[in-house]
Length: 518
Image 1: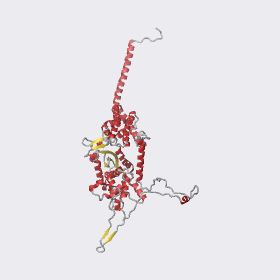
Image 2 (image 1 turned 45 degrees about the horizontal axis):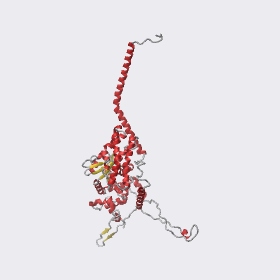
Image 3 (image 1 turned 180 degrees about the vertical axis):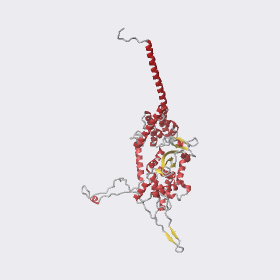
Image 4 (image 1 turned 135 degrees about the horizontal axis):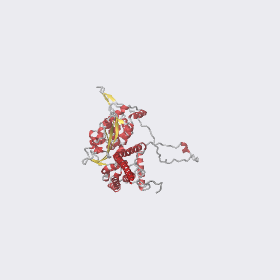
């Protein structure tokens, strides 16, 4: 044994060292177990925090898109025509567009401007000097659109009168018809105020500036009185319009907010639309009482989003609910996830089918329904299968998790359009109808109170229904504001825009004849 090597360790020393190491390991193990228990207790909080982060990220993305992004939901693929640009269908589409342009141009008054040749150019040719210049047929006319400011007329009504020399009795010609007693403003001015506020979203103070520039100063308070008084006058027509929507077999519904000024709270404008009529209804809340009051005693199919406010009327004895695939698709859009992008791609087939049916002029036919079932049906089945398969792979409150939950919960309603060709795959119709309310919310900001909100809703119903039937709402309102005062109450149906268009819009028995200056 070398003198420099250490003496061998005794068995007792090694045992003591091993026991010390064992005690250290036990202490470390106990500490890890305590840490593991603490982490398990913190796990729900961690999951909740991740869900909150995902929700906030989704909200930030939505707000960013709302402020800076485009509002159209069309993609590069869906914006293209279904047919090839060089095929026969494209020629038909071009002919249809040309026909639409011709129809549009025919509605504007035409002013022919004659451009004549100088006498000097007719006397001799400016090139060779020959005096034998012969007139020719003119070139086809070219078109120029020009704007001429609106024509404001101040009518002075001269009423003839006579006297009996025997009894001194004086008789006068009938006074002109007035919308309101004592008013110095005609129905055209009142109609313009209504249309400008509802369709052009112009607040009354801006309209006052416009009228002042046109040479007709109208106080803002007077325009406000005209607006609300006209709504009260036309309420019977609005009630008849409500009856048309309630009797429809398919109704589209949606709602949006519109604040009240005096109560300082948020009210809501609801829209209920059918093929022949559109109505708006103002309510102080978003509760389901509004659809109950309007549609509660009728039946049919109502196309809505997933809002629970419609549950009270969607019963086995009441209305059949149809869902909105545009809402469903929208929840997957702009999510950086391969699964979400896959769903958006599948949804394209649904609207390609609808555009193809429109281009083939088979909308609403049995062939249209077969096209849906053969092409849109498999795409919808694939969407449902993917959502069922991956629902446990995402946190429920994450963007994709929420989108999957919406599809699964609404699946019965989202596929209604595959069984009834009258039902579209989305609720975009009613969403478009609320755009004028959303634009008004940015301009006139609010309504004074609930009654004022309902007056706005009534007049908007008449104006938008006019547009639905391609009627100039100004002409319609200017006519019926006077006509309704002497019209039989039992025949209010004839004052609805679609009937008015055929009975009165062509000039037969027109009110303007009654108010013309002698």
